[in-house]
Image (tube, rainbow, N blue to C red):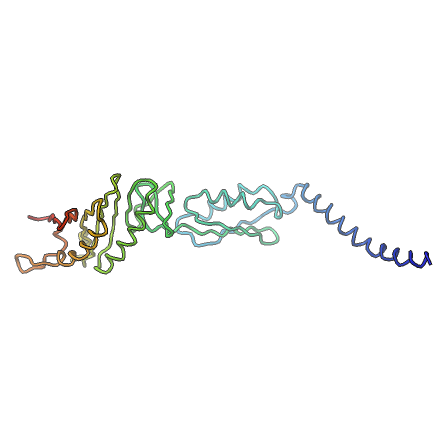
Length: 262
């Protein structure tokens, strides 16, 4: 009876031995592969940059990635590469993925600048400040200025102004918040050029909103702007915003207008 019981147990042991040895081989094989010089066995040979880039050069990104590669296909430190790329101001987000047998895909989401911030940075479409080495003034973006750390307040107020001015066919081209927390903006209404070389088509008005009751003053400004922009001139011509230089809303119950001509 004892021999009969031992025989099936022995058969089961024999059957499981191949599986056991296979597992041991995989474990030791993995340790062996980890310890050997992987870059010479399974090197990352190709770096492919994916994404629409308007401000960055793909060659520069490839160079950064290749300099950070310190392992092979399986052991390359993707987190370290991503951290290095995220230090680039123009990069908003990065994801990396391996493509067998020797390729690393680098998916880049570039910053979308929607406004200038002070003299050395931009604000992106999420209201965040980023500061590249060079700030190009060739972009058609509004200028936002304010104390450091207050970009969120300026950005939020800009969105309010944008909606209000759009209804009047004006746009805010500059918004300033000074150290005393006083607001001032420059609005512009595009006029059709008289000639192809007419550079005065976009006329600008400096608007002072001040520090207190800003919302109330803004509403008053929105009410009076259409009547100021369209009046009656002396020689049967329309008095347009071309003659308005400054509108000062910092009065309790009124405003002041400074003209470019007497």
